[in-house]
Length: 490
Image (cartoon, rainbow, N blue to C red):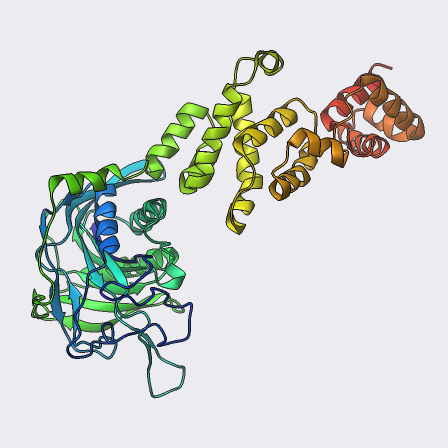
C-alpha cells in the first residue's frame, strides 16, 4: 500500500526589535551575560504591568501581509497558563482566538514544481527563557534574557507532502522574513525554530489519522531528516497493523537521526486561555492595515523572476540578488547608469545592453558582497558602471578588478584614475603584443612545435610567457589569437 505524508509546520520567529515585547529591556539575548537584560516586568514580579511593543505588532502584520493573510481589524492578547521554570509569570502572554493574521499562503518551488502551502494563522507572543542542561549535571541553568522577546508563531495548513517540501517552505519563509528585515531568522541562534506535525494516510483517502508532533527542529537538514525517519517509522507501524490511535509528541536526536517519544496527548492540552486583563484589545482601521500592505517590498520569488526576465541573467544570479535587497537595488542603479551612456560609448558598446548587464551581475555578486558583509558600500553606482565599461572594453583584465574595487571602496574614487595610478591598464597595442609573441615563440621553439602538431593545451604556457613580458597587463584572449595566428599559419 502506498502512503501519503500529511505535514504541517508550527514556526516560531524571533523579531529583532530593539526592546522586548512588553518592557523596555533590550532585545539582545545571546549577546550579553546571562540574566543581565531583565527587569521586574519580564521576570513577572507581582504588581508590574506590561506595555505592548508597537513595532512588534506592526512587524507581525507586515509578515502577515507578505504571506497574503487577512489582517484582523480586532485583536487581543491572552494568557496561556502553564507552569515551567522558564516561564516566570506562570503564564505566557500570547494570542488565542483573535490573532493578528489569518488565512494566508506561501508559494515556493521544489525541483521545478510550484507548490502553495496555506497559512492558518500568525500570532504574536512573548518568548520563554532559555534552559541549558550542562552535561553530567543534575541541575538546569536558566537565562531569562530571552524571556519577553517578541515571537511570532506561524502555523501552516497540513498542505506539505514530503520532507523536501517542508524544507523548501522554511527556506522560502526565511528569505521573506529577511527581505522584510523583521528577523535575521538564523536557526543556529534559535531565531527561527520549527515543530513539525506529520501523519500518514493511504493515497486517495481523505481521512486524517492522529498526528505526531516533532519538537524543536533547529536546522533545515534536521527537519528533512526527522520527517524522513518519521515517515519510515509510521509506514512500518501501518504495515504491522499498529496505526497510531492518539496524538504523540516526539523529539529528534540529531546524532542518531531518530525520533523518540516524549509524551502522548490523550486529550487537548488545557492552557486555560483567557483575555489578559492588563492589556486592552486592539482595533485597527482599514487605513492602518492598508499601510501595512503597502509597506511590503518586492518579495524574493517575484524579484527573482523579474531579474531573469528583465536583465536576462541566470536563475542562480537572480536568486542571489533577490536575497540581498541592498545589492539588488545597487545593481539596478548600475543598469540605469549603463543605459544612460553617452552616444560615443554606445557606439563602442553597441545597442544591446544584455552583455553589460551580465558582466555587471557577475562583478556585483563576486566582488561587492564582501564589502556589504563588512559594512557600508562606499562605491557609487556611477563609478561601478564606469568600471564595468572599462572591463567590457578590455581596458583592464579580470585579475585587476579586485584591486581596483578595493581602492574604490577605500577612497570612493574614479575607476579610470585609479587604474592609471596603479598601472593596471591592459596593453592593447597590437604591435607591442605581436613583438612579445614573436620573442616568446623564438625562445620556446619546442612548445611552438607541439602546438603546431596539434597539442592545443600547450599554448597556455606561451600565454603565460607573453603575460610576463607585458607585466601581466595583456588580455589573455588577445594573446591566444595572436599566438595561434603566428604558429599555425607558418
